[in-house]
Amino acid sequence: MHIFAAQTAPVVYLNGTLLFVAGVAIVQAHNSWRWGSPLLVTLTGWGVTALGLARMIQPDGVTAQEGLFTAAIFLAMFVLGGLLSWLGYRPAQGALR
Image (cartoon, rainbow, N blue to C red; front, side):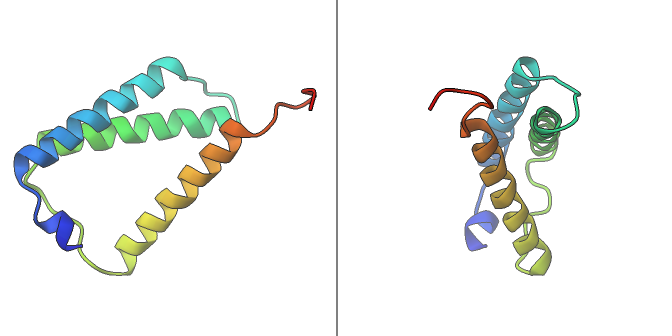
């Protein structure tokens, strides 16, 4: 957690810019509101866009604190990343193997 506390505002702003651009790219390429994995990708894109914008607006805001909530957020991001990776790289239904 000391890594997050030691970041300067310009580094946080740069991170926010990169998150914002990545989120907008995801939303532009995959803005599908159908139920299932397309919705998960779309919501992830909008969430990354919002997080990037928030970090750009207030780069010297509150940093993550050690605790159960922060650990739960990191675990949720890890699970979401694993799930999206599995959904993206699984064989297509009916594809030849």
